[in-house]
Length: 228
Image (tube, rainbow, N blue to C red; front, side, top):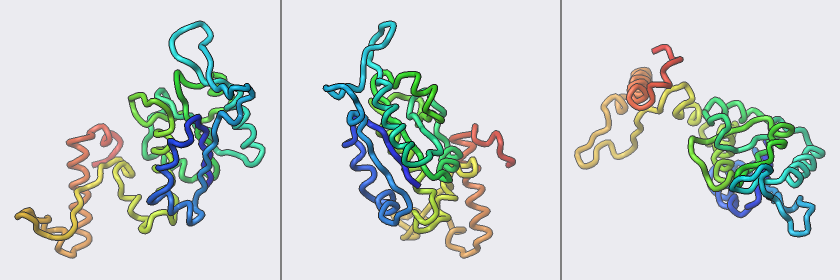
């Protein structure tokens, strides 16, 4: 998979992709992440990327030309499955969205700033708009990092145990059950006996019961489409 991220603040993305799972995924050749500075595509002498809103109002708008030129330059090299704009008014990110995007080959992500990007970019280039939650960030870079992480970890071979991602919260509309590790007792707090029993079917039954119980308590909305 290749992911191209368009931003006016490329240094914000130095850290998230330089360590841990995302670093290993790139070193293994399972994904390629490229960061593009939108200012490099500006045709103005000052490398301008934003301007005042037509019709007046507070806040600047990211200009169409630099972003459009960057997208078209990339499209000359390869076909893209999705051009994603990270925006608070996009589709809320859910695990099913991550699952679908993990099956794609090439993605472009646009990081917005100010009041957002010129609407014509959204009308003519963007194929998918995603929000990571009902709040506003200073820019789309952190949202892009979240989205990339949520996608890349699902690619076969990225995680040491590929079944781990399949048992994460939200994969089956349930929150994950409690987990424990050694020691079996600490300060008098004991691990549930069932997890020490070695009875795998019973352990899985317990985990399912715990997942349903936690979901009912914390996110009952997830159970609407689940037969429990």
